[in-house]
Image 1 (cartoon, helix red, strand yellow):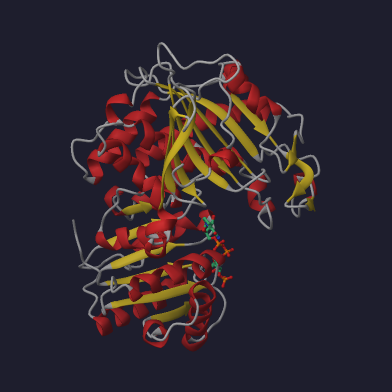
Image 2: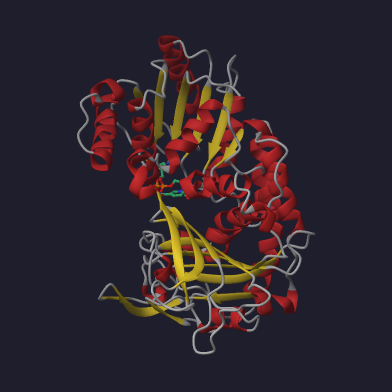
Amino acid sequence: MEQNMTSLIMIFGATGDLAKRKLFPSLYRLFERGKLSERFAVIGVGRRTLSNDEFQQSIKDSVTSALGEKDDIEEFVRHFYYQSHDVADSNSYSALKKLADEVDEHYQLEGNRIFYLAMAPEFFGPIALHLKSDGLTDVKGYKRLVIEKPFGHDLASAKELNHQIRTAFSEEEIYRIDHYLGKEMVRNIEVIRFANAIFEPLWNNRYISNIQVTSSESLGVEERGRYYETSGALRDMLQNHMLQMVALLAMEPPISLTTDEIRSEKVRVFRSLRTIEGDEVKDYFVRGQYDAGTINGKQVPKYRDEPMVDQESNTETFVAGKVMIDNFRWAGVPFYIRTGKRMETKSTKIVIQFKDIPMNLYYQPEKMLNPNLLVIHIQPEEGITLHLNAKHAGGHLDAQTVKLSFSNTGTNAMNTPEGYEKLLYDCMRGDATNFTHWDEVAYSWAFVDKISNVWAKEKADFPNYNSGTMGPDAADQLLEKDGFFWWPVTDLDVDTCK
Ligand code: NAP
């Protein structure tokens, strides 16, 4: 793998929210840890007029508000340049090329370029085309394109976008961000599975009864109503983050840890997803939209009363689904996934529920034994918990649940890099493993489109869940009809060993 940290990073949308909150602090952390070579430079692009000094001041502000005062901040911001440029204006790319070439020469960047598109998706295609036609990609080093979600709105628009960017960049040069793949514990799924003799032999339909993936937010749609109205939870969360977690949980062990091997195993999971369409959609998927309610003692409005949201909106703010993977390992094991806004708590957790043992000698009618669970805590806390049954201390042979927990917070949380930091670093190293390949995007859109097509035709009975709850009743019934229930995420927090 390439280890060349010498690079010119061009951030399109450098005056925007993502750049300020995530990208600049992440770049600073790489600088602070010595992971950026002295030979790096950043050109920020936005429409508004800013001098280099003003731009550098905005970088300082963003780093300070995220990470506090830093002694070496001046040294860091000296590497930043700003170019006012309207990406829709074909004539202004030549000025950008001139600046890029000058900066390249000044820092001896060997023609290595990363183009980070932190902008609205409608600009992705036109920018990529201009980068090529105006010679910005005509370099002797590497050229890489980093793009933010959403990657299209459905399969057709994703194909169109992919076609546009592929005219300027090869698949190997495209880094499609799914920031969940930057999260420490999402990356840990592979290690937990493939480095532990006690899990991998059990990781199949003989021993696992079901898997539950929950990603709940307590926040509402906030100021993103305009975007969210065109998206909804299915497209915003399930098509990408949720299905990516399913793929990591379900993939076969790769023959090596190379990008190609891992990606091809993930793609095989996407190919095995059971297609849910037409009348079946109502049996496998549930949609919801939040009503008013109370969160942390505060009254919050319903979705339809949020800014930029239609009073009759049919957009789902919650989705739960039962995903089946029709292959040898997973036949018959439901993967239940749910995600939504204005839910009871902010939490992303994976629960692997093992099957009950064949003959439970410790069964007591009044006190059922709990099944073994492996809980992977993705956020806000990071760790793993294994739920076992053991003898109650001092009792006769009564069994109780004990939890073996590992929490990242207790050990190396201070050193845990933020997701974007890891993804930026991966991109500089040329490691695309934790970015989504086109095939993954295409299969996941094909899966999701079948559901959204059905939902688009029928007006839902919204709102159907109160803010501050875990979603509509129908999401609970989805599991109840299979004899399961959602493990309450608030009861599963990382505990110390008991
Ligand atoms: P934002 O705050 O609205 O920023 C948009 C940026 O684009 C600004 O820097 C703006 O600069 C620039 N821009 C807009 N039109 C332009 C044009 N014609 N020419 C040149 N620059 C132009 O958006 P954001 O929240 O940062 O989001 C950026 C992208 O990241 C979106 O695709 C979003 O879906 C994705 N994303 C964002 C987040 C997040 O946390 N914010 C998370 C995940 C994904 P001027 O105003 O100076 O023109």
